[in-house]
Structure formats: structure tokens, C-alpha cells
Image (cartoon, rainbow, N blue to C red; front, side, top):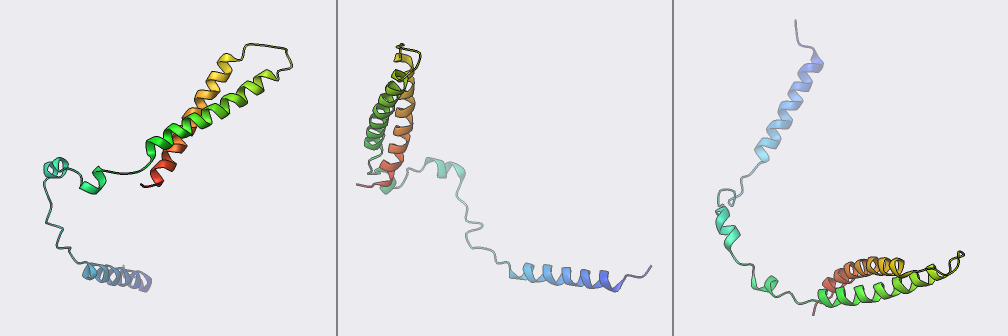
Length: 117
């Protein structure tokens, strides 16, 4: 069974493509210059990253308190406007306040990390 012209041209194109990519590869000089894993783990971080100066904890505190209070006040107002008459809104208000504080703390942390001293 003789090969068809289409299969010959596909095989020739594949060989030319592989030969071109194989000849273009260059080995990096650092490829074989590998440090031991233990040495990488035990080295201290560089001095500039060890003393990060930003407002992450201040942002966390301000965001948590601010959004916690705002959501707590909104939850209290929402619960007080019930059509079923007066009821105890303490658990509802505390729950939503804590959820707002968690969300505000996360947002404040991200904003505080973005602002460097």
C-alpha cells in the first residue's frame, strides 16, 4: 500500500515544525544551578518584606467598627418596623452587626494593605 501525497505532506510538515522548535530551544545557564530545598526554606525573608509598613490592622479595626455599627443600626430599624407589633430584636441585631463587622473588617484590611506608610 503506497502512501498518499496528503499523508506525505502532513508528515513532512510535522517534521519541519518539530525540527524548527527543537533547534530554537536554548538551555538556561541557571537550569542546573539549583539550590537545595532545605536552604531555600531556612533562609530569612529579605529585610524590606520583614518590616512591611502599611495600615492593614488599622483598616481592619475601622472597617469592622464602622460597618458593624451601620449594619446593626439598619437591622434594628428594619426589625422595629415589623407589622406584627413589637418584638425582641436583640438576636437579629447582634447577628447582622457581627456579619457587617466581618465584611467591614475584610474590606478595611484590603484597603489598609494598599496604603503604605
